[in-house]
Every structure is written in structure tokens, then in C-alpha cells.
Amino acid sequence: MRKVFTIVSLLVVLVLALSACGPAAPVAPECKWELGLVTDVGEIDDKSFNEAAWNGVKGAAEELGLGEECIAYIETQDAKDYIPNMTSFVEEGAKIIVTSGFAAGEATNEMAKNNPDVYFVGSDQWYAEPQDNLAGLVFNEDHSGFMAGCLAGLMTESNIVGGVYGTDLVPPVVYFREGYENGAKHCNPDVETLGAYHPGGLASGFTDPEWGHETAASMIDQGADVIFGAGGKTGNGGLEEAAERGVWAIGVDVDQYYTLPEFVRPVLLSSAMKMITSGFVEIIKSVDAGTFEGGQIFGPADLAPYHDTDDKIPLGIKAKVDEVILGIQNGSLSTGVEK
Image (cartoon, rainbow, N blue to C red; front, side, top):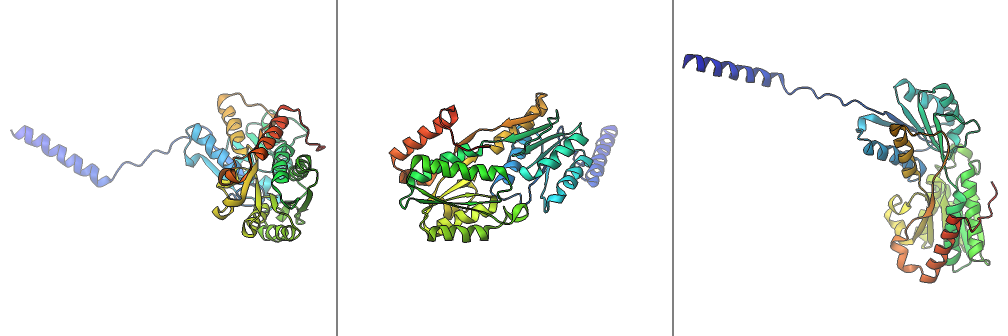
């Protein structure tokens, strides 16, 4: 009995000692792929291309089984910070660096050249010099712009439609506008198109919702009853003004039904979409699969669902828009936009 008691006593002492030490420290999971996103000038929650890129990074991480500790982003405050921000990720050991927006293209190209062991992926970026570790996710913005323009041209009652845009220094913004205006005229030869680019260049072209509000208000005062917003927070300001004034709105880049304030939903006809999030997911996954290819990769363009405005759009208009979408996607219909 004494021997049994002694063993039990020792076990109790051991348990008490371990308890006093507290729980074992968790072991930090090893990151197979560390992902970093460098935004274009603007915030991560721009409800547009920066946010879509971040959602792509998060989506890829989830599909690859990576935790939140394996991904991070840096919000660029000034164009001169693109390279320092990417360098920060390189020094921290990131294996894939994603950059968002046309303006970061030159810096992304330079960083890829100087860091051949790191994969770089940029959106809306064209590279004159192909590299094995560099992929540019690009889109035919004029395609979804044309689709949106057709919808606007058919839905207008005043025969005047407007567009609020970011800077024209970014070609995708220009393609959106030209596609939108050509699409409106294709489906409604009598339509008048109003449009304005933000005058602030890359520094503020996408981050000025107040200018977007004021510009949309001016167009509405001139009779526009549909407003297209293509320019990050600047364009979003125009869409919010459309909602406040009770005219139709059309979003851009992503399905903005899910990103704009809820009060915009009752007037949001659709969004001219670039499939940024899913495009980034597939490219990042290709690194893990060993199938990554450098160069330009075209993502698909489409219109978002009509959502709350579905029952406000006549069946005949829907049929015409579907016809245009099919023609654009199969190549039988040209947008008339020169690049």
C-alpha cells in the first residue's frame, strides 16, 4: 500500500508542477507561401481594385491552407513608396508580392528584375520586358464598359447618361469611359454622353469622393439620369450622389452591390466587372502548383447581376444587353475602342 500511495503522490505533485507552469506555448505554424500586397495610392478598403486585390490574396491563402499570419498588406501613400514597400516585403521573406494598379507597373517590373527568386503579380500592368517571375493580370475594360454603356443607354429616359472617372493617366480608366460611351451609343443612337476625368492625376484621382459627388451632381443637373462611376473612391462619390438624387447608378471593377453603402442598392443597375479577385487567386495558386507563367494574363469581363433593380429593368432591355454581352464575349461585336 505504501508503494502505491507513494506513486500516486508523485503523480499528483507532477501534475501540480505542470499546472503551475501554465499551458504549453503554441507553436507558430510555418508559412509555406508568405504573401504581401502593396496597394496603389489609396486605402485597402477602397471598395474597388485595392480591396479586390486584397480579397484575392486572402482567397488564395484560404485555398492553400495558409493562416492570417502568412499574409499582409502595405497601403501606399505616395507613388515614390512603391519600391520601398515592395522591398520591405522582400526583406521580410515574402515569396509572392502582389501589386495593385497601373501606376505600380514600372516599379513592379524593376523589383521583379532585381529579385528573381520572388514571384510578382500586378493588376492592370503591362510589362515591355517579359520575366519568368512576373505576371500582369489585365482586362479589356472597354468590354465591360461597353456592356454597362448599353444598359445605361437603354435605361435612360432623358437620353443623357454620365460618367465620373479617375485620372486619364491610367489607360484602363480611359478604356472604361470609351467603352461605356460607345456602348451607350450602340444601343441608343440618340443618347448624349457626359463624362469627366479627375484633374488630380495619380496623387488624388482615385481618392476624392467629394469631387465625385460634385461632378455627378453637375451632370444630373444637366439631365443625366444614369451615372457610371469608374475611379475608386472618386467614382464611388458619384454613385452615392446618384442615389441621393434618385437616378440610376452603375458600378465598376467588382460587384459594387456588396461594397457600396446600402442606400445605393435601390438605384444600382449593375457593375462593369473585372474579375480581379478570382484572377489573383488562380495566379497565386499556380505558384504553389508549380505552373506559374510570366507575362500578361487576361481576366474575364462581365456585368454584375441586377440585384435589387432586377424587376425595374424591362425584359426587352435585358434581352438586348444579353445579346451585346454574348457578342462581346464571342468576338462578333467590337467596342470600337482603339488601344
